[in-house]
Image (cartoon, rainbow, N blue to C red; front, side, top):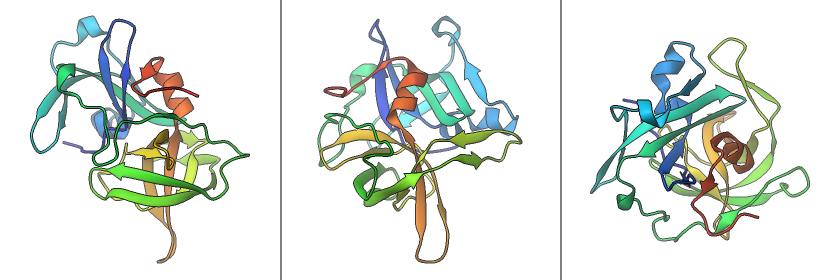
Length: 205
């Protein structure tokens, strides 16, 4: 099975809770078939196909929708929401969201919380244009570019500012020379637009 990190949780109007990560984390099998989108209505979700886990608990979830075109995001409906604790270990509950744009990104400090490399610090250095993918004629675009350490398995990691405002989730990293490591981050506004639900945070601004 493919593995990654949960970036955030969403809640819909009837109280269903959803975990959010990348499509290449939650639905890599579809990408292997060059399928770049997925949707299954709640009434059709017969068997759980995602497992959320830490050292103590395991939670089943049902993949509901995903997209790998422009952005790389998927959401899965959680089978037992009562087990979810929406907090960052040793840091607390996300307090809000922060929209990063061309006027406020320069040298903006950020923290990432990933399954593999855990907490790392870095800074935003710009925005991407089109990023090619392994699927012909499919691109990711308008992503945040940061100097930030990530490792395989950190895909989907939430990225925050210093006040624990969520700015997005990691889509992947790549290295230039030996002293340079760049990470691409999907902005939170694009993720909310895809999910069409409310993030589990204290406020949106």
